[in-house]
Image (cartoon, rainbow, N blue to C red):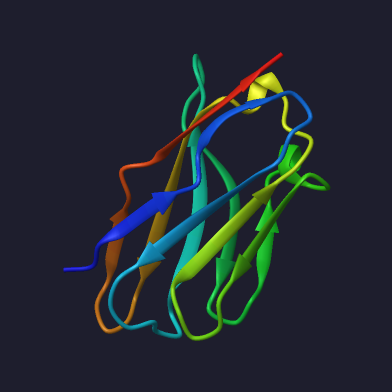
Length: 118
């Protein structure tokens, strides 16, 4: 069973930066796609950024220019560097691993809390 865990959240002030990390246990496969989602107060869960095994990256519009996702080669260790944080970035940040090989699977971590105060 793959275990997904996040770390790096915390309490910061507006304009500060945070680096979140996601580690998924086990082997990495070419079908793996790792994404950061967030659950902010009053909103539905939304995708922040996603990276596949080959390094192709997609960002949500609100993340472009402020957040950077990176993946360690041949490992399902993914980081999310967040800069210029705003109060609206407050929420729980969750890591998701999806794959179709060797079997279809969808794994979530428990999340890490990010709180941005003014």
